[in-house]
Image 1: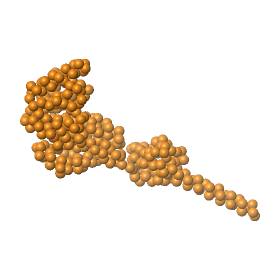
Image 2 (image 1 turned 60 degrees about the horizontal axis):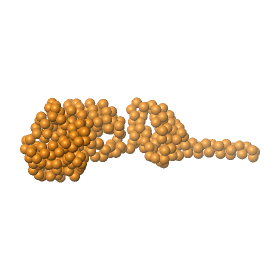
Image 3 (image 1 turned 135 degrees about the vertical axis):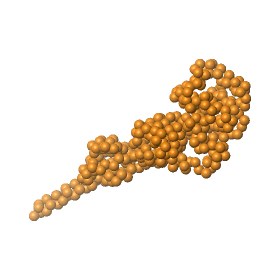
Image 4 (image 1 turned 90 degrees about the horizontal axis):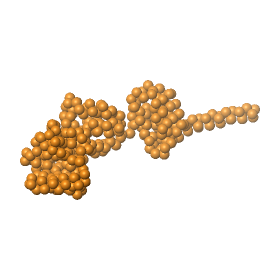
Amino acid sequence: MKSKHKSIFGLLAVVGLTIAAVGAMFLMPINKTGEVAYLYIYKNETLDSIMSSLSQSSNRLGVTAVKSLAVITDYEEHIIPGRYEIGRHTNALMLFHRMSSGQQVPVRLTIPSVRTMDRLAEELSEKLMVSREELLRTFESKDSCAKYGVTPETMACIFIPETYEVYWTISVKGLIEKMKMGAKSFWNDERTRKAKALGLTPDEVITIASIVDEETANNAEKPMIAGMYYNRYRQDMPLQADPTVKFALKDFEIKRIYNNMLDVESPYNTYRNKGLPPGPIRIPSVAGIDAVLNLVKHDYLYMCAKEDFSGTHNFAKTYDEHLKNAEKYTKALNDRGIK
């Protein structure tokens, strides 16, 4: 009788230990890196491909536990794409609940200050699930742009280079609407009032700011440069901005602008065309935009890079004075063998 009781107790002990082990498998932390990790689940994934991705940041027992839950619940029939957090203390039950209910964590997306929409599309596609090709099709399509009240030339104006929280799975439409909301918030009463006082629209401010940003990385000098271009614009003079020639030529490695480059046929060439180009020549920085809104009021109409290559400029009120500054800079370029 005693041996029978011992057998029952032994069996119960084994069952209890088994239940405890199984329970531990589902409840123990699965993160094997010690750092917060993320599981990215794409469209049209299979359970095996998801488990393969999970194994990069999770221990073997954790992967087994998540897979078991997925099989039991027919998860593969209703996979929800997303970016799911695997914290240091995340267990299999927690992660599977997030995966099966679509509880993804947002991405902190910082819009880069880049020169072309092609480059913007490339950088956004590296941080979101949308493809570069899908983004570019929207950026370059007149019909698609019209839906958002912009043109392909002014699409860049709604991308204010700040940081936003968006879901990794956001659609192109959702992204652009998010950017429009961000731009609306950026153009608060104060900025709008300053633009209006200058007789400029927000798009025109951004276009001038893009030129200013290309002229210098020195934020302290940007309001001065903005004032010079504003003077030219208001006096109906050609802006004659070298960065617009580089943009027209699509060659941003040019170190010197020669006379034969000034004839390139493009609406962006401000040597051939008066007024502003049809849109910004880059996504300008917030510092560049605010430099235009807070431009320095002066009488300068010309500027030339300083011969000391400090990144700052010599300003001039007359063309003769400007030629002297240009001569000094040209000599410095020649002395350094810069072509």
